[in-house]
Length: 347
Image (cartoon, rainbow, N blue to C red; front, side):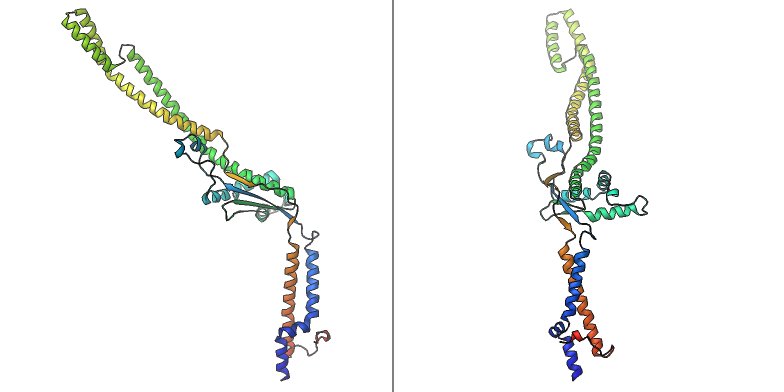
């Protein structure tokens, strides 16, 4: 019976804590003091956080938004982007292109104290970079850039530079395609102008022979020939017949070249517009984001969270203390360890 009562007492939570409260208090107190000491700036370097919040812009080209078509058919250049644009912006920010520029711009190898002779220096750099710099899409569709660093000014500068690079990198990618479109449309435009000049020269040669309006000239000369024939004006008839011969000889070439020139003129208008659009895209820097909040120098550290470390350490130490004391009591009750108990453990 005594054994059963003892086992019952050891499992009773209230009685257990009364029996061991001094030991548990000492364990938690030591853990809290140790956590407070070792979470201080002497052991853990504090970090500051700066944040940039921005909305993605529509990804349409500037030329189509400003130059192309009627007003109702143009893209809204001032409209916020959707989820697709936000994901594209995140992909650009997380790219190696942006990372390498940030590393070079702020000399992060030196800033993160990575030795030049380190065997895995690039891997360490990538780990430090990803541990201190993060990107996410908010529930409202914005993109948030968070940068942590031991230097608050460095954190703010990196965050703002990342926001600027989001436009720079996307414009560089866009410029490659814009340059290609500009070169192609420019060559087409020059070729059409060259063809138009050649056709115009041919028409001028034909017009110098007196052929410039087939239908009008044919009608007029035919009426005049009828009059001269009725009036028996042989010199006039001879001259009119010669002119009609010229119309018959060069009229087809005139009509053909005139039709070709009209067709070229229509294509010139279309290609010229494309050429202007490509030039507009090439010569203008397009923003792909709307910055809502720029980063600024933080005044308070965000890491480490000292109270949280102290709380978790104290809780963990207390929990482990309870587990160890419970095991001790059970082993003692079963006679596995000696019968001698701690005097201070008596209720």
